[in-house]
Length: 231
Image (tube, rainbow, N blue to C red; front, side):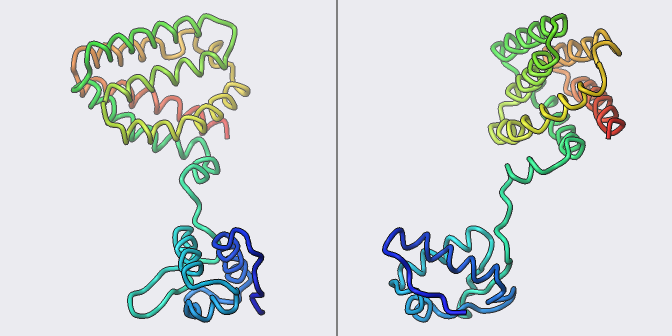
């Protein structure tokens, strides 16, 4: 299958797409060494520098890999899925299992590292959760609940942890909304974890990592059980 010449604009993107199409079509199966830059440049009607940048783009997408002294080889026929896309495709129960691991450690770190400002933020978040619990909107309550957990994550003072949790939030929110559409959680439990969340805040305030991790583990296990039962 001939590659064919390219239009004048934007050449790197066009070259990368043309090569990607060839790989997807099976012209170069996984494990195959691509033609050299000079050959590809001639077939595409572009300079070697354009081909080199296109190959870098394909490498970044996980389609090819350069091997020192051997050339560039096809390692996949489809681009690697990025982390946000992978999370969107995951089940909320699977995400919740990872969330539990993250939040248990985060609660311990929060208890060790919290500042007066963190405690004030936690108190506000708990009060907002109480207000939302008494209100008519399940969506507002779920948002307030997530905000309290986010405040605990923030008190751990680890930006990577905060970014990781932020990536979970959209999937968690959608899953909890789906659960709420199946089960009236506030009718089943009028306090809906109020005591546990208050205990979590107090454990962080008391700088008691063991108590903080025990509380959050039990609360998340309870919610995960509900999610699994709703499948």
